[in-house]
Length: 124
Image 1 (cartoon, helix red, strand yellow):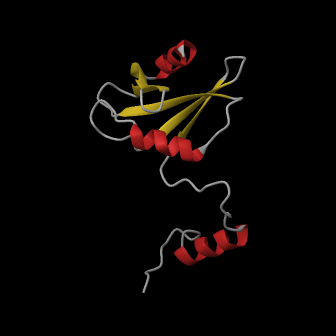
Image 2: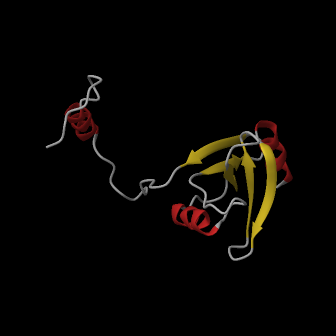
Image 3: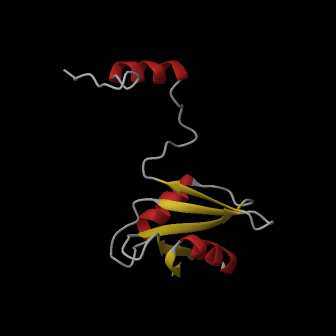
C-alpha cells in the first residue's frame, strides 16, 4: 500500500489511507487541490481480477470524510515493475457481458442527434 500512497502523493494532496471493516478493504482518498472534493482510489494489482459488481459495492459502501458517497473512483493498477496506471471510473458503466451498440447504430445515433454537424435536433 505504501507504493500506491507514495505515487498518489506525487499528483494529489491530503492523501489518506482508509480501511473499510465491513468489506475488509483498504483504499486511498485524496484531493486534486486542497479545496477540491475527495477522490476514491482503489489499489489493484495487474494480477487481480476486475469485478465491476464488487467495485460498485465499494462505491456504495464507502463514505468520504465530507459525508458524501464517491461520484467516481480511480482504479490505481500497479504491475510488478511499479508502473501504475490510473483509470477514472464513473457511474453507470456498461457491464462487459452486455452487448455494446454496433458502429452503424452509433453513427445513426450521432447523425440523428446532429452531433456530427455541430447542431442538435429538437425532439418531438
